[in-house]
Image (cartoon, rainbow, N blue to C red; front, side, top):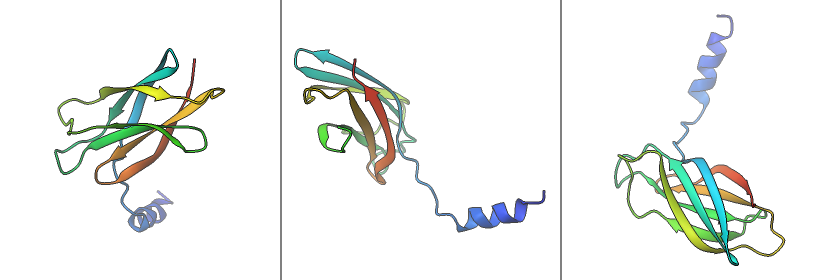
Length: 117
């Protein structure tokens, strides 16, 4: 392969990428004036030293509207779904973002945009 040496050098020069939690699915349901979010995550949890430890609901400007803390690893349950109810969404808001966190690597770069029904 003609480009193989370049690719090898590029890979050697790149920092190791962490395994951030992946947001697999999000369901948003309105109940009265509040919302419930059901979020399915996958992450290569290895135990108490490295696991997905939360996710949050953000408005489109990045303001946190709700936080779901995950209190333990899910190394034998992948992917897994957890819910957060009682989230107040400001009137006129049509989209929010979901962002997941890992106890080692912090908040992931990935956000998933959810259009509210």
